[in-house]
Image 1 (cartoon, rainbow, N blue to C red):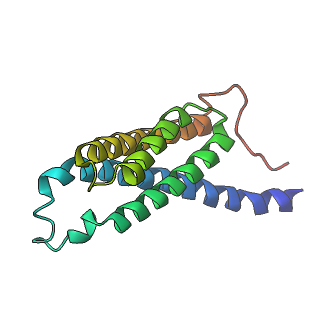
Image 2 (image 1 turned 90 degrees about the horizontal axis):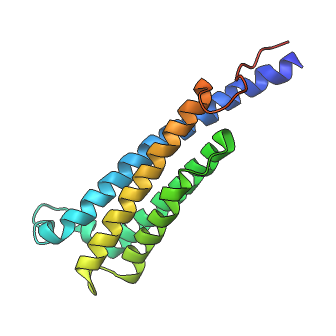
Image 3 (image 1 turned 90 degrees about the vertical axis):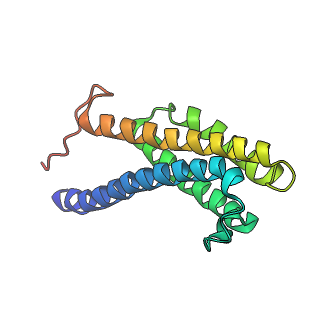
Length: 155
């Protein structure tokens, strides 16, 4: 029994560290995505001159949306398995809907204003979902959110 607990503890710590980093990276990336999309209509002409024309490319943006969505889903599902609270999904699901609608339905060529608005709002919601998940996981680890203790004593 002691050997099993000793083996599981580093695995738990490693997966917890990954989830912590994934939420922080996801929140930062979602926030930067929202800024990028909000500012894109104003700096669209400057990007090629600065060598950053790839940031306005649909392929890059859609790839980023897919990666951000997968990262957010993975981080929030992992967090939910720890804290069992759906609060973060209240931000994630509308955020994903807005992000995908803005990135795939209203692309920058057909409706730049709608595209920028939807993707900026979606990215902001996803960033809030990551931050909410971080707070819930931290509260769970501290024992704030629940009655039981979280010590894993080796007996």
